[in-house]
Length: 245
Image (cartoon, helix red, strand yellow):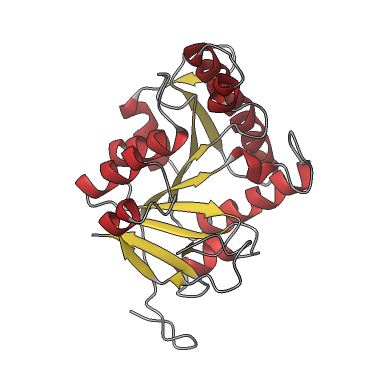
C-alpha cells in the first residue's frame, strides 16, 4: 500500500515503541524539563494513538542526570546508574501528565518498584494496558546498572511484541557522520544492523542494535523536532531511516 502524493509505502503498525532521549524534553533549555516541549511531544503521541496504534514509550534521563557522566566524574558507576534510572521515572511522570492532559490514558511502569508513584513492571499487565488502548511508559531502564535506556527500549519492545521501534532524535535519520558538524553528511534511507555496528553510527548502543537484529525488530530513526514527524511516517510521508536486516 502506498500514499498517492508521495509514492512512499504506507507503513501500518499495530503496536510500536517510541524511544526518546531525556534531552528531547529540554527544549532550548540546557537542563531539566521544558513544559511546552513536553506538551508538543504528547500531542505527537496522541496523533498516532488516535490512528488506533498501540504505543509504549521509553524515555531517557539525560536532561536530569546521566549515569555515565556521573561515573566519569568519579562517582561509583552502579550508584550513578541508579540515579540515572530515577531520572527516567521523573521524565515518565511528566510525559504521563502531559498525555493525560490531552485525553490519553497513560500508565507509568517502573522496573524499580515504587508503588506510591507508579506500577511495577509485570509483562502481562503491561500488555493488557496496551490492549485497552492505554499508552505505557516504561521507566527505570531494565532495573539494572550498566544497561542504557536504548537497551531497555529494545528489550521492552521485544517483550511487548512491538512491530518496530521509533527512535526520535534531533536529526531526520541516520547519517554517515554528524550532519550538524559536516555539511556533506550523507543520510541513509535504509541501512542494515550490521552496517550500523561496523560503521559505529551511534543509532543506539551496540547491545541494543544486536538485540534488535537477533529478533528482526526494525528501528525507524526520525526527527522529533519536525512537527507531525511521528504520524507522518505512518501515513507514508516524511524523512527517516529504517534500520533492518
